[in-house]
Image 1 (cartoon, rainbow, N blue to C red):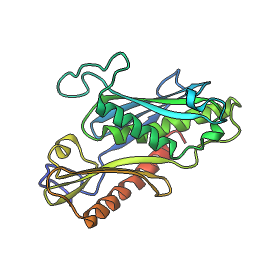
Image 2: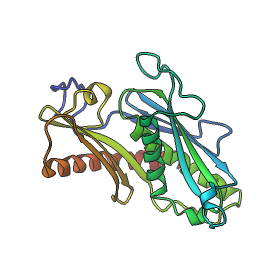
Image 3: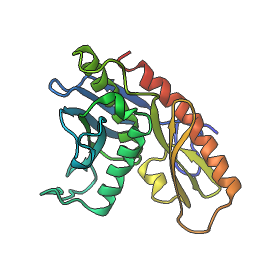
Image 4: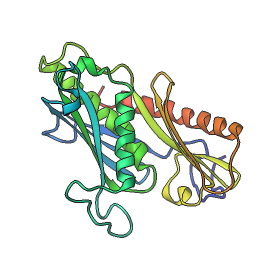
Length: 242
């Protein structure tokens, strides 16, 4: 479906992504970095390497990949207070854990050695899909950090065994939509985030019925729609910094 539909979309069909761009190497000091733009959503991802691991991993011969997520005060229409002093809200914690799980799903931590890579994901501007943008851009930052370690002779081979990306899908009225912006997400009857590896294996599916419960057939159809978009995102990731 092209043109304007009941959701107010213009110039793209229900099964089309917003305009996605990823620019790597945007920060001078970080071992890896990427600026990802999905429509009007923009997230800056920075990968930092530390020569240590959390206490629960010491002397186990493996590393750790984790993430932090934050939204700048004016990323949205009204100012949001900063989360300070290491205290983060429940939503922020849930997103950070999702990003970390997604990146570790495609990382062989034993190849990383006893070091930690932290991916800081800062939302510069939010218009829906900030967590899926953080995962997709975070993987590019992680990939670049791993390449930096390899160039420095600190690892023998890449610990990355695959790529990973994420996208949102949902139901607005009776229409299935790919890559929802904020306006669409705020009125969706079903809201879903899908995380998939480059080989097409599911990492996580977060799905919520905001009103009436939905069927297994609907779940499967939305996952298939997400996978269509994720194939395109994988190509964008691959072209970035290649």
